[in-house]
Length: 361
Image (cartoon, rainbow, N blue to C red):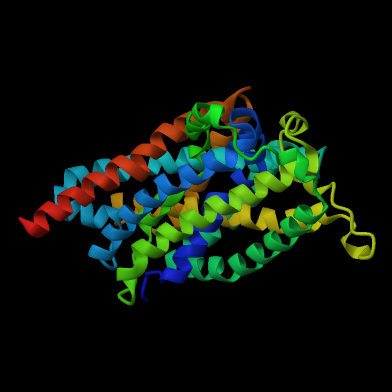
């Protein structure tokens, strides 16, 4: 089986992985750290990560059909490849625990108040594990199918919010004297664009891979505009100051939508978040797959099903520990932010430079 992805599948993988949890919480972050000019912060961060994703996509294009472990072994030797694989495995493990605990907290706070947090993780991990077991090609097809549905639903819902929201809530759009504030807020929006590093385990197909860096860059810009749409419409519905009091501001903003003439859509939040939860499942499954792929490279003789089970058990234990730590998600965000800059920036850029030097030297 051709264990690669196409450019179109890459678009949906990036979009769904990046927005899986962050799309629900980013309005609060922007309102607190940047204010009404937060759209500029988001687009600037999108541009920065667009350049980084081009580097990863360029590496995958240079070494078609291979993942980062494979071409780092060719470029730097087995020792460095093993170090990278261990780092990415631990990094994605932390990301998985963060996503699982965030998902459980969101579902408990908004839907199933009496359900213990650990139960959400326990029930969902077999689903994530099964998807990860099926490999890159199958998960790419899943993303391709679901991505269209999610983007259509997102466009419709936020289009209604644009129509019903108060434009005065987002004015003025930009305050020149607060430019420093907008720039400083970039560090708080980094978490919303981490996820591009999953491309390190998605080998590109031989067809049209030369266009992949440009497509990846445009996808990150599209994600930036999607975040701007979510933030601006949420503020329009709730208000710049009120939105900071909600832990999941997007949910509260969607609940303000009124559709008098469509009876079965009175609870738009239920319909939208059902699709949103599916997006979270897709995002966590992709990160789960990343751990499995790196561990399988480290232990090539281990059965894939056994790796999947062990990884799931590790995620469950780390999530349980997270539930017992008061500020776990805040701590995890800090660790993921710094680790992500290495995973999505420093390591790929270093490999890209080495690859260019070897090719032209």
